[in-house]
Length: 495
Image (tube, rainbow, N blue to C red):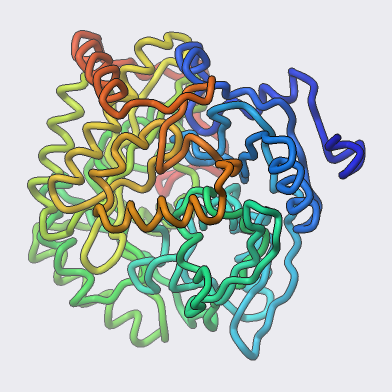
């Protein structure tokens, strides 16, 4: 059926290939396979929006689920089947369609990586203001679907404010163009919707002239808690493009992997951009602000190295270990108590974790603790993943949220959204996708592999039990390197 409509090369149904799509950044666990039908029945690699449309028309006619997938750099199962069906691998739709210098926009297909989009804009003297830290591999459509905060959002705003238009294939197979102010399905409906309302096939992204100078400046602090007053002042008093921070454990892990940075403390890196004179004056101002809050000069070149390495968050995995991130977006005014509670949760769950984060916008910050896992031990890994639930609860209590719900956390929907917004999304889903064809079992609902809906109460009970088990386990250990230093291109400022 699919081959007849799309051609032999566009469809794969061999088990070995289908198994490549049963997980994302998080590992495939036997315990999860008992709950979900995460191995797709087929994988389709469409070459254009018309083929995406044809797949959805067939799905409606023959009643099978369709799961859009980019590079799968998220860890909550948003691009993994819950009930089997067809995975739409969008990475073949990767063309740069147009760079419009006069209008300062870039139009790319949804399967293009952000790195490809950034490079295409740069060639024409333009810069995309906001992009994910995983930009070398993350796709444009995938990150729009999760709507996360990213590099540049502090200055340029959330991703939906940086989009001029989206081409979307709706669940019934119709193709439309959505704009920010549209009265029918405005662009914002598809941002952060995790692919349940439509498949984004192309995006027109707003751009800006390349700044004259970009300068990262870094400061050492005794700990991330001590950096709080400085971080809280930065948005209003310095206007940085991006601010990121890491605790000492992060650099200890890198050192164990042979990546020598020379950093032995928590580090805050502030990225400034603009005219050369303005940037240099801002750097002097930021340095005074940091000093007044207890910040000290780090090893020479630390800021430049952290900025250059901003997309390589897992260098320590070369030791043979694995890790998962948790994400929580929390009001910046609550920075100190939230940081203290996050570390308390790490201790309670007996995790070996490193804390990273960034300022998401002028009023919120993103916490991203990375914790070690051993996927050869599925019960331990599943129990460790319950930490994400506690992080979500902490964020909700403090008036924040997590970056998405995916396949594993839909039962937290009511903690993350107001009742009126949930009603709006449910109504929209019923109107656009009455057969629940597109990405079922995500965000608005949880579903078992059989298709039966999950009860939020039973899911909460299971996660509570696994969390209790986790507190009886020992933390995972970081392996020691068998060889010498890491690759030359990963060397830190001390190399």
